Picture (cartoon, helix red, strand yellow):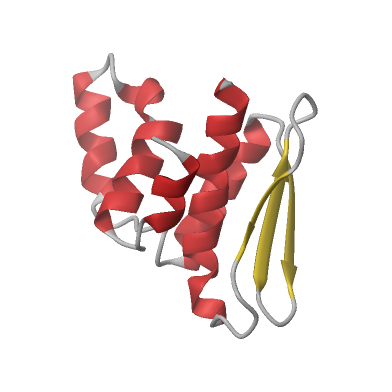
Length: 118
């Protein structure tokens, strides 16, 4: 997936599924029982629209040693940096509602992973 494709995604099920696959699938893919239990919980987990779930994405990134900076002023900006990569910045226009912060967190996390894979 490209940067442009990630940025073009809307908050919702497709973005949530991509976050799940990117950050958690390796933990459960070899254990059917654990995977089933995890996916049942995931049905309640919407990180692109729920700030509590988005914090779980940030927690997962911290476990992978990402440095995370969130700036909220006229708009939302999330910067994630891995020591071996340049900062990855996702910004939204000034005046964007705070409610979009979970979506921006998810997109920044996915872009950080894409950059790290290069």
